Length: 337
Image (tube, rainbow, N blue to C red; front, side, top):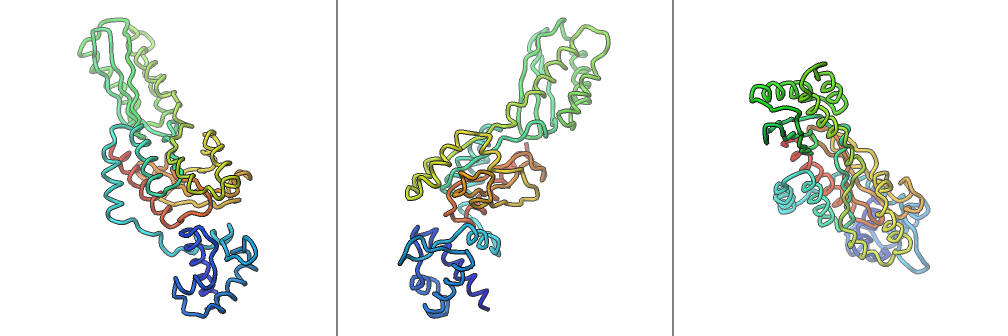
């Protein structure tokens, strides 16, 4: 009973501190949360929580604030992630469904996440090298000019123009299309490149070789492997009271994409949302920063990570719900192509 009551007190302290941005006292807890016990009992529970390192007193005669350990206990004991409202779900769906290509999906996602959470949102582009070939289309533009369209499972589209060494007949184009589709579609990037090279005949007019060369060039382009989008930096203005400890280091980190990718961590599978609080992260100078992230991708295959970063004083239940929901919608969009 005492443990349950102290957990309720800790939960109330976290919620009040995140909401009011002020240290929380026992009297305020009793008045706001109906804990069913006297202020004296709450003070005793707060003393125990402080001794155990879950809360601390920032200065004499002040209320208490959560520590990293307290936030961790709060997150780990969440029985349910706060569900998004119907209006929020409709907003996510309508905003993301309007995207026209992968870049648009990523840019919309980062804006949406930052608006929903009022934090800095980070979205990693799908990792090109882990995707598969969904389709290849060959379109004749002129007798000796061909448009090659490559579509990947990530939703990424590459278009290249090939100059051919000889005129291309309709029958030759049909044969070439069948050869390319058979070699590449459904294959991973590495396997598609191998199969395409093997499909080039040892002798011929060079048309197949020219198309395969362009396709392999497109497949080997890994520009998006470490590409990310960031949004909502202005939200950090809400944390002016902790500028030197939390905001300044985070602003500096936003300039380094490699740092942000490491902060987000590896893409998880199965819709698992990861929360790293304060010093649990990989960088000591960002010890006042928390990260809420999850993987996304088509058909439960996590190709990349998205999430938010911000000072440890954040609405964890709401942020976790928003991150999970946006990841699910983006995954659905990629799955539907």
